[in-house]
Image (cartoon, rainbow, N blue to C red):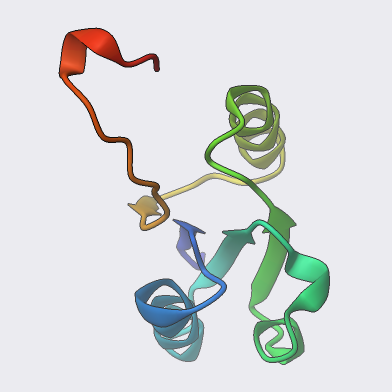
Length: 94
């Protein structure tokens, strides 16, 4: 049985390279990004499933993760996506 990796922030850079690498090694890859409809490379690789995920939207995170876990048994999570939030810890929201 092939292993599955769930990658956030796979539209460019390290996330995209990681998706390509794991797919080339035979892994099933769930690659998430804010605009998967604009992706022109990863969507041509058979072992990669593209999904929409904006990590700045808590409801979208919960829904996407629930959907993934209902459909797949995830072996590895590579949380590559992120955003900057500046300020004192006690002064900023989640």
